[in-house]
Picture (cartoon, rainbow, N blue to C red):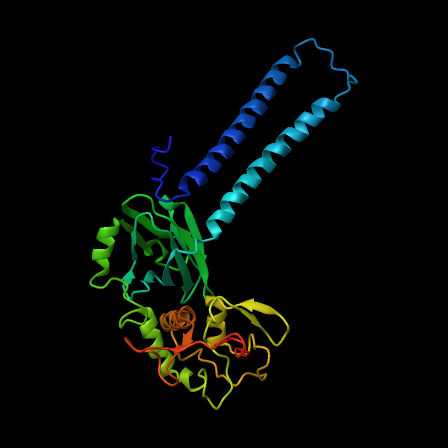
Length: 347
């Protein structure tokens, strides 16, 4: 059935589930279409004006018939709804061990950044059988990341991050499209997903692969340079004269704000804090924030690098060597214990 040309090859782990929902919708709709059309034809012939039929309104007890006609379609609709909702929630929650890749959309291209520092334009190389989480943003207008064979589509918005995940199941090349009209050359904003065997993917990564934490050339090492260039290490260190939230253990933690709210320190929170420090001020710190905005001083690519550097600090549970970001081979300062860790976290 799925070899019909209108259906791309199923290339992801949940492509078959999405197709099954569509098939259920088609079969259900087709069944009722045929049933209703057949009854229309039968009644039109049976009660044609040339036929001698008693057309007086007769009183019948139709409670059972009405219950079937109302309850049956309702139960079918609810069943498909909950089935589709279960698949939807599954496609929205990436596994914890998913490989993370960043995508920046721009008229009219897809820019891809791997954690190991590899960069691609209009292409994304991935290993087969590995869950992949894409964190995406746009430099200009709304775009939409669409891979028909994977049955995934996600809008890519300027000013914020959206995420998408999938798990390729077959080696091969798959079409990548922008599914949102984004300008005159929208139709040329195409690319490819190249799914490779694990060994071929390691060879494509090159010597050293993604490399250890902080290795030169990785996104996190580039982020360390951005961190130093923007003088973030003048404030976000233990011995700074200015009180600023500590970055150790920040990413993924809960941050209490001056407004009384609590937020999760994810990619979007870090991005907003860099570009608009007054948007979410951490409890216990002055308002307005002493931190200047870097909105006109940092690009989307540099923001991604900076986020990866902060993730590095959080994953290692430590901060840099007081004034400079950690260099390859430099031992980082251990994180303080919970007893003396009283400051809130925010970049």
